[in-house]
Figure 1 (tube, rainbow, N blue to C red):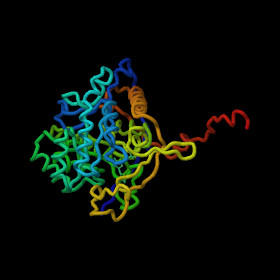
Figure 2 (figure 1 turned 45 degrees about the horizontal axis):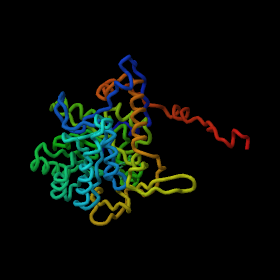
Figure 3 (figure 1 turned 135 degrees about the vertical axis):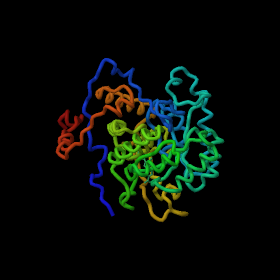
Figure 4 (figure 1 turned 90 degrees about the vertical axis):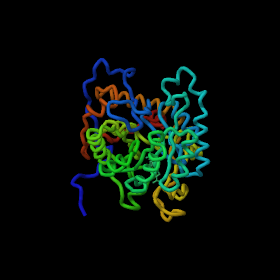
Length: 386
Ligand code: RVP
């Protein structure tokens, strides 16, 4: 047994200190583009995204409708793998058939598209039926795949990556994860992962930490893995992008994750709240909600993701509701504006500079109290003295 000397920290425990904002730091000059897949340092990756946001590999999140809207907004979806192979392949095909959507001038230079101007889409896979699922998804036109597991530091993931590499070489790109430390990153990078996903236990609907005692604060996990990624790039010349996955409660957490070195962000709750997510919208009192459930919940029955056999013996996720938040394009547009504004304050015009120059500071418990000082928000009933 060994205990790490540092405390496990979350993204809320840091703030960014502004850097010098120069004339170049204007909204039009800020590039939020990120590499999605492994590439040689100094070269272009096979896939870039203009908006560093991808949707979680979840039943309640990544449907073809959401995938189309997110690709049009410059991000990318991963169609969930908790369904029959033929159904998932049909979902992928449905997105790839949206070719005509990107012909219009406005969306063209922002949208995430392939060489034939078809929208790009990703798909989840697992380390059990990969020998059948990978060929079917590839045939359907998936641009990138991602191993979907709560704990990716496993020989099963390495074998899946090896199968993809031997069967398809560089033609099939497979991300792996999730991990929370540098050792696990290195293992998956050596096994050929196209990108590595970071985060265990931080998801809004996740109970893994309580059920199994496994996980790590997202900031600590990310900082450790970022160091390993940079060392790996120096040593091998291969840059393996990092995806920060789960537990991002507000837009400032996205800025923090990107500042700490994440290349892009995976979100479940954020997208589940929107019109385009596949879950039911319902009214409770005078408020609208959308359903949102974890892949580790009894409802999802995603045993493959949690290494359980057959029906799930115990749950690692909950089934609930999140406040409805409107359309994807409005929300992603607002988030992009906030990230742009943060980067301008920090004096960066692209994510690579942001990674290099961001100055972060841990905050004390007292600072939290000050931020949360109680102010009664204005309300018509108070204003009218009723
Ligand atoms: P969030 O964005 O906080 O909703 O988190 C989404 C992430 O949570 C997913 O990408 C996945 O890694 C994780 N997840 C999904 N289901 C569960 C669960 O049931 N425990 N966790």
